[in-house]
Length: 404
Image 1 (tube, rainbow, N blue to C red):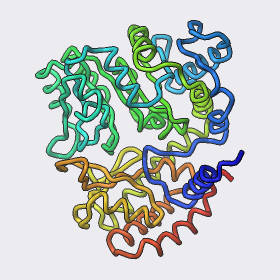
Image 2: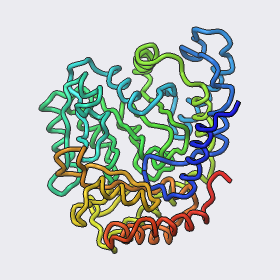
Image 3: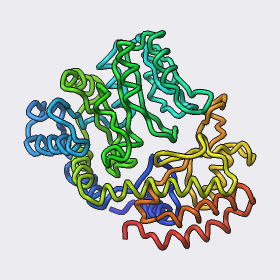
């Protein structure tokens, strides 16, 4: 039976994805093989529990799939037998909450990065559940606009933090996980590293690894990993039972088996030689885009990037982040508004966050980043009509086919 309204929406969305430049750094394009698993009969089964300890019959094959997904993640990140991986969390925010609940009690102190500085809602912002359950203290940036690790250590000790979160959603510089780990030890705290954005770079050896310095590492499985919308928690074996019990039955019911299988496939793809080549190109494109934007007069937070993303300060243009986002979208370019240091409220941000994972998956190289920077200048600075730029964007994207 046809469902014309829904079918039209799905077809239109594919056309939108094909014809736009996607610069949202938390988005990417999964492979056809991953998408096939997400639409497979694996979706039909309940598998509450863990391999070998299910609450429903008929789970032998799902035990195999879940074990395979966890083992492949361990291989991707070169983890030994002293690490345990849980692939059941539905999202990165859920994975972070599970980690906190396994390591501390409600009301104890959680030290995380503030939203305007580049942190995530799940790192302790007051509107999210971690900020409500725990005594949340937020660290920011130093006078140079960079992380001040000495100040983070001082805050951890002063506030008697039980968990310190390292990880970013819009801070464009590499993280020194060793210094976070040192601060945690000095404060008698646990170190949780959220690598959702940089997991692909870490796996490829292009960003320092948190694993030698953290008790728990969380990550989504899309973004730079190019997998399905899901998450995993890796922890030292000492915390395995606590983590597993919080995930199930503490926070959620049965795992989404089709997603688990897609995570296993993601691990397969991440272990291939071309995965590292892709991650290198992500970084090359990010550097090229940052340079091209600066040459055209844009101000970037921290004056550049070490990773896959950067944040444009729109205040000199002058535009608000929402205005810039809207104009760009009208021109066929998706980049999201984002708070930057000094913003009073995330509801009125001054920045726009851009990244290169998705355009790199489409096959773009450094020369294409210069063209993208030109589109930004024409739309945001020279005030050309977005509709005219959109035609050029659509013509450009025909050179980089998607799912054809």
